[in-house]
Length: 161
Ligand SMILES: NC(=O)c1ccc[n+]([C@@H]2O[C@H](COP(=O)([O-])OP(=O)(O)OC[C@H]3O[C@@H](n4cnc5c(N)ncnc54)[C@H](OP(=O)(O)O)[C@@H]3O)[C@@H](O)[C@H]2O)c1
Image 1 (cartoon, rainbow, N blue to C red):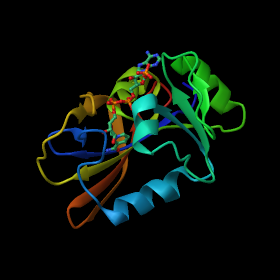
Image 2 (image 1 turned 30 degrees about the vertical axis):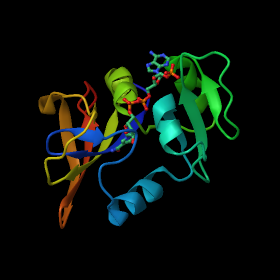
Image 3 (image 1 turned 90 degrees about the vertical axis):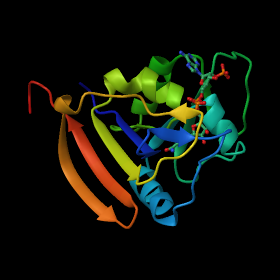
Image 4 (image 1 turned 60 degrees about the vertical axis):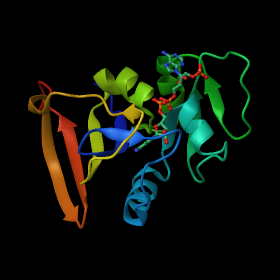
């Protein structure tokens, strides 16, 4: 499989969003997100682009997936198909990142080779969720706990590893 990463912060009950926003503010996780994705292409669903208030993430190529073929958002490249977005991202990035939200994570998960998960140690109310996945198919490369946050890096187990 060609490298394709995903990065997400989720609560213990898998919530990632509430009414178009993150349900928490953890500066350390935002730093982790910035450090991990800077220099890479980031691919997101249209609702996540809305949640950024249409301000592209700096020092990253920003790609949006939507079913609206006429959508234009300055600073974002628009695609009506996930695979086309991934292929375009790979033109100048060996490991693009899927950065959400719930619909895009679900759509992309079968192609993901590395997951950067931040687990927020609380149960929160939300309307967007991270999909369930089989832990047996993943190998943990790294785990670091910092207060209520657990940072995990998981690599997909393939025939090669
Ligand atoms: N905690 C985190 O790490 C994290 C990260 C990112 C986002 N979030 C949160 O997640 C929430 C948004 O997630 P979400 O699941 O509601 O939306 P989303 O995945 O960001 O975007 C959904 C949109 O993507 C487009 N789309 C979905 N499937 C498609 C397909 N097969 N082909 C073409 N386009 C497709 C559609 O856009 P159109 O409707 O325009 O057609 C759809 O409405 C927000 O609350 C945000 O704050 C959390």
